[in-house]
Length: 392
Image (tube, rainbow, N blue to C red):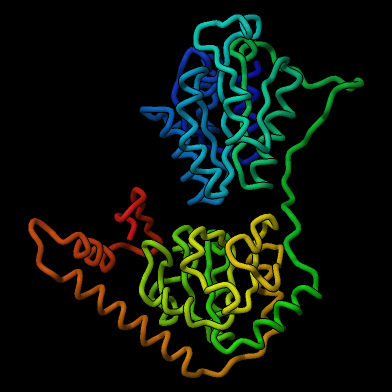
């Protein structure tokens, strides 16, 4: 097989089965090879390269898989940036494959020649590299996927267009080569027992516990619910964690922040203990005032702990695994005024939303549209909207 055919084959071996992209002369070899790989790689051809990157980001968010996009050299590669920044800022894994002018033309101010390694060095800061020989391609693809998966970020591989159609060969067993393999074991997922017990001490001492869950809690629904029940806590959600727990639970107070609910504001202002799970929610003015609540945070990425609130205990680990380990260390709190007030406020907020939705409007009240949709859409249906007030 040639280099382009190997690229799609190797990505498929990693379990990636869909790519979003747009053809161009800088990726001509990849275009032809992708047509030949249609039985193993689904190709979603977009109308503009920017949408390829946004779709790859959304794919990663909705499936938990690595998103994959590709684009031609020069302007095509530049168009990917906005969607790739969406993935980077929301901490989801996306691999971008981009073309480049022929190796012999690089440095000659050739048509549409862009310094792509410099262009992508911020958005793909953890890994961006350009292939120069066929034997290099395997480890570049392997590292791009593994690093994107491990660090939940964007990576980029640049393939000059003349290289794409050369015969692929594995790297020889000689000095100066590297031999990578497929497989991602995942990061360390469980904090130490001492740290778990320190967190349990803080949570057991609290009488008014507030939880905030984000995208990192999407795979921990049962554990978040069990934690809220044990602590008799209210649960607020960052936008990226909206699907982490159902809205119809009486202690779930909905979104927090600029598009948040009134009960979420009241919860954060009145709590004495704050538990943040899998979230880097940016607007600290909507969190408890520093010093007013003891804090515990759970996050897979230690660099994001105590970033928005000065936490007393930081637990570095997978949300579901960490919560399961923490639950037996906690004392069951009895139902009381705190939880009763939360449930009363939530019920009142739903009535307020119903009243707003039923207000007459010309030509239509948009809140009425979504109220009626909520009653009719099937379970597990995903609706997406642009950023701004439409997401409220």
